[in-house]
Image (tube, rainbow, N blue to C red; front, side):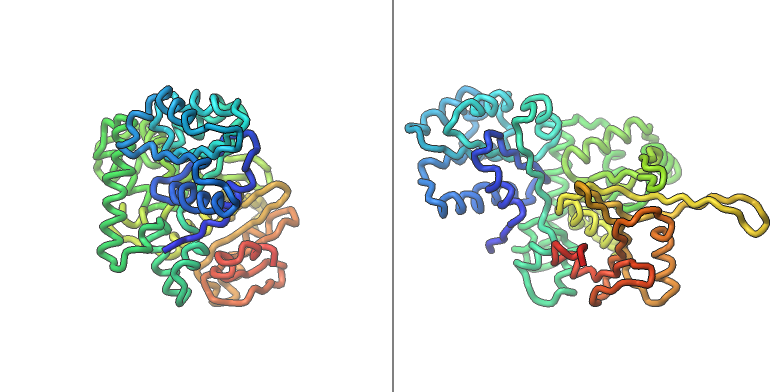
Length: 417
């Protein structure tokens, strides 16, 4: 099964010959190697590039172990570059190379070298790009399959595809498995033997039992406001060994560095400032999230919210959680203060959208409830409620766009209805 990843392929193509190192980051098994070694390789061949001008090296392959030593890798690549024509150097999982920054920087000075690399850990790549490459790296962050990419591969009934998608997520290999047991086993093993083992080996986690429990707590509370102090108190309340807020903050960093979770900060829409006391966390892949919980807690409302967040991130938006504070006088002349929440404040350049996620809006009362936060926002940026119902887009009397989930997920221009 050949799955197209048009968004990321277009980014690679647009970055050709730009004098920068193209760095593809993302969760392990999300399709980075396939993007580079299959889709982009096919594109290069289709564009007339000779095979001997495409240098592909998988740094995880044990047969390439000697190439993990910097000078061995440089000598190997140099031996392949025998003329002045452009060479495309594709390196998979480059963080396995010792002093990889120096190797990559060496080819920035080679005029006929166009370099592309993948990596699965932000500690080795994302954070180092700023200091090691100083603007000479072009990062392309990759996610598991979006629903649109998933549906383009499986087709059929959209509701059935949605049910499978929010249950098993968007890791490409899942599509090749045909039973719940096979999919569940794959995802569980992937978390335990790849993701968790990577973090355990790399970070030398001392309290692995407590770390596992933290991961389960965060997976079960996606979309709920929390912080290290609140999570520490949760540990105490359920009788587990104590974890300090600082340790929890460190563990959350491990999960973010492995691209397993992302943090959405709370943003005061009226005050135009961030509120640092609480944040929300979302899982990069809902299938991995469900596997962590043994597929026992699949609340569609929360999973839908998580998938909308991921879709916005895939489209390139920065995403915050909006807080709208309202002050006023009650009938007894006492002042009150109330906070409303906007699920997502999505920003890209001059664009901003306020978005609520609602499984359904069965009546006017529910519409009013979902619209309350919007009514107190003092600007004219677009306000949208995304519902799971299969409906045609329509506008409420207050100018709020009501958008069906499938329209949103399958049409990249849907926010502009």
